[in-house]
Image: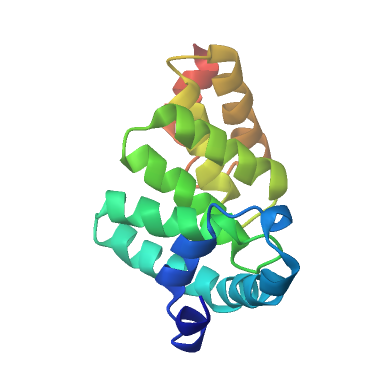
Length: 164
């Protein structure tokens, strides 16, 4: 682990620490574990996010999922958390994993109800829920129309959901 830290091998460090429970580490290894986690939080999250976003923008959604999941695991307290949450949800939608996308969009919306991606989040939640939960779909569509009437997402798709 020390060699991975010294070489700044973020992927290697992540693989080493991802399944470790801190309580199970003996006191001699606690400091090395803490260094590893701090490095992932300081540099790994942004590196994994950047790689995930690059893969997402290149339509490499399976790769994007792997990177964004790594970033998500350690993003608490990081300024990129909002972006990581949104792109994980959007990526799940691109992979047609609709139940996961709904769960992730709902996590985003609950934590960032006024976030930079809220309009798109509400739109996607309305559409993704339209075939499985009409009430929830209408709820999100109404929030979008009422709070963001001039949004490009307040379109005929949303109006159709409301009028069903």
